[in-house]
Length: 352
Image (cartoon, rainbow, N blue to C red; front, side, top):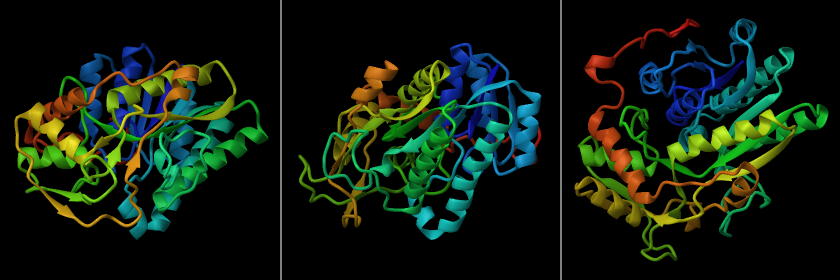
């Protein structure tokens, strides 16, 4: 029996694959590499010292999905695959709705066809919209302020309806807060396309010289230093949360949502200071206007995940910064170093 991991070459997906393999699970990975690199999967194999099948494929490919379920005995699915940029989603809403919603529908239909009804879904704290109350708990009202967030919220609703129609399903909806850091080895980490949308890869790229300076949006919030406060969680802690969720759904039925965060908030300037201490590099920055709709403070209540999944974050902010810097220092251009540009043209539905 194997776990199918969609989007397994991505930032969170690759770290989760390492944890799965280290825990003794067999995995099958599919990814179309639209915002990831095949090299990440090669490094997952090196880190885990285990082999697995991976396919270059879009989950919208029904025939390809069908073939994978026919060829492999799949026990459960961890579903990461999807477009993920808030800003891009506002510019290309149709592409986001088509890819993220239809992709999940294709996946669930194929799971039903092959009698697989255990699913861990990669959701997001964006489903809470701009909550003014912290810590954020799972029962808070749900809304979304951009097409990306709406695809996550709509998918959650689809999956709840799916369980209502067929109580054999077992589904965990994992609402992430702000993933940062990298594997301790420095071999896998966050490698965004183009200019980073998230704070930590922007900081690390400034430190390595790929970006001139960090732009901080707003310094007049009602916080200790005027900059926005967010809940930053180490990607390895996040990956381990998926293992706990998988263990839960393997032994039960139902659908439920869980916050994956630390329950602590750090400001942008606190993150910059922590990274400067971890790296020994100065991070130049400039202050820009507040972004419309941004809230001053946003952090999770992870109590439900601790109670039900027996999971809680373990890694502190200093280690998050140290690991992010180790990754960037060892991989100044991300995965695309000259000596590892492998299989980048393997874009058809082939095993890689």
